[in-house]
Length: 154
Image (cartoon, rainbow, N blue to C red; front, side, top):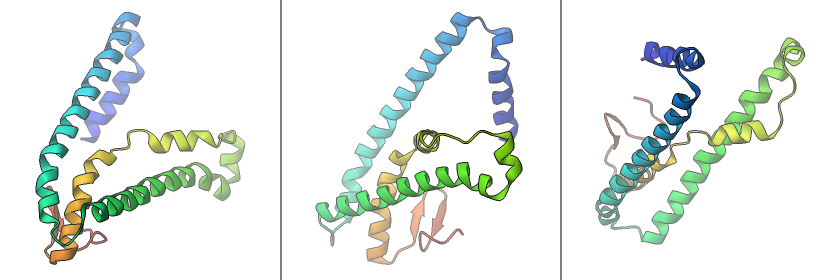
């Protein structure tokens, strides 16, 4: 998997050598369409799964489920924003060499980076499943992994 990522980065970096400017512009449009199609599929899958999840929430009201989802989503987004700022500024506190070599980053850069490629949409059904697993005591399962609590890694 790392070889594919490294190869993709290398090809992207050298794309000006073997692609014309019109090909690079067209490839950007193709990627935009593919991202749009993937987002459409995600929304359809969430829509198909949501009635099953809501039906399983017998002891919770819909408003409680929405509030819990907003709180969990806000915590995830807030953690990602704080993590982006920590990655940008913490090395500057530890090393004077980093301060000399790199100019001080603008405060807006980590904020924009924190929202880049955020995949919160995948987490919406998982939040409802987690609430259901807390109520029933059954293990919380996502895809191929399962855990008895969200803090467990095994």
